[in-house]
Length: 164
Picture 1 (cartoon, rainbow, N blue to C red):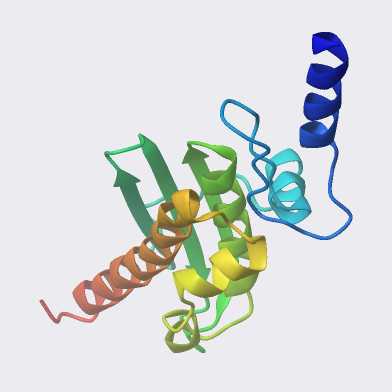
Picture 2: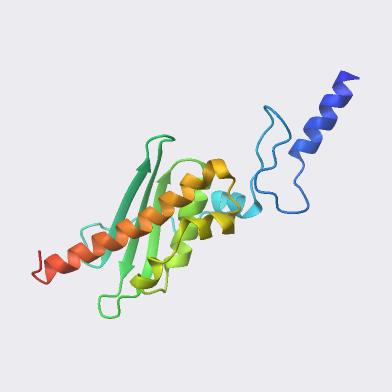
């Protein structure tokens, strides 16, 4: 009887729900289930890599969350003439939600003007990935990394133009 009940509970908890439920927790000690977009970006991350950080058209954002140990490096490559982000890459040390947030962020910044990407909010990333509340800091890291990369690029441009 106990085995039957345990198998039934675990079987239901491990089953992928028909409707996207970002944080389906079947009870104490059972695994958390993530939205399929998180799993997809974790299993098949987009734009993993790095650029030479000293190149004048590259902005690097390096951010971390000491509480959980996640570290995210997001880099943008900018067309100096138009101010458009032509490429973006990331390297993230952290959980699946942090990797997925980084991956989404690189997809969203490509092809946009730098002013536009500063309007990307962590809430949009979290909503897109259906992140559970306990993982919202991952989308915050992605937003901070975008802002840090833009700031780094702009600092390089100011230095190159003789403005300190």
